[in-house]
Amino acid sequence: MSESSVEFCPVPQEQQPIYEYQQMQDSWFSRWAILENLDYGKKLAWVGFWGLVIAAPIAAASFHPIDHPIRFIISSFWGSSFLLSLVLARLYIGWSYISDRLNNTSIFYEESGWYDGQIWHKPTNMLSRDRLIVAYEIAPILRRLQRTFWLIGGLIAISGVVWLIMG
Image (spheres, rainbow, N blue to C red):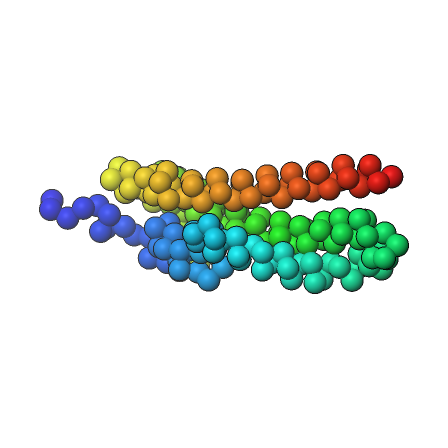
């Protein structure tokens, strides 16, 4: 038998984890997580800026910028961080889903509709390839997103301490 069992995969192409991974890499939004550090930072700063544009007027309604400048800045930052966290959560969930699909020993797929789901067990060579992709391509992306979450969480905690000190 000269052909590999990967070629006999009954899973439709658009439901194969490797295809989903390639789609994530090509996606306008999902590829933010694989950009170089400077470009990644620019994208997050862009989201943070627009979050600030949305949050600052709301913060100004509660804390007048002239009377309570520190509270205004902190509450604006919290609002902006909320939007940024939603974007990061969406990125993390997408990449985590692909990681799980690639790591699984079997693939659940639908042949023609929701009513006829099937499970196909990956051959060893396909499973090895998929797990290498997870280890060397996706795991660093997930770690980067986690570090970004920790950074934002740390900044929120520091700003919370400042808020409490301000009394």
